[in-house]
Image (cartoon, rainbow over all chains, first blue to last red; front, side, top):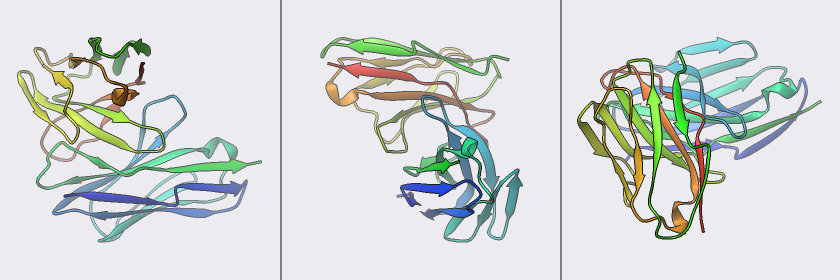
Length: 111
Length: 114
């Protein structure tokens, strides 16, 4: 059974204080790993897809990386508007079209 | 494009009542799915569809029915609501069932069962 574990559950940062969110996974035949951002009261919004170990993607202050066992979402010099819940999901070889989600990390950035 | 739309946004039911949560997408996406999200948790897959006329169960299907008569619509039916079904429900779609595809989510329906 595919498993996705995100840590920490919650992270509080001061504006400008860089940090990383972790997503560790156990899947058979990883096809891809997704990062989503979810604001309160809204649906998840796509951020990145990573396909293979060693791949990196960036968007503004966010950078996602992937190894064979985990992914990191690095946040550089965060701003209050980066406050949200960040969800990680994996899509595995035997479950084409289905994603398994982690429980998310809720990030709060204080000004 | 409106993307993925869901109605209603909020709903309160009494135990034993039935209702249908509506989901529609205008992107001609092949794959559609329903998730529930409980407080402090990620999304759990209820049912999914890889195309019109084809549906399958996800991780937590009990108490829910789905059908897919058109590409655009994927309604979720609660047969006899229970307090354990209090949750936020998200519908999602992606371009194709095969391959690796980004899912686009609707705004959610917040359901309370008393």
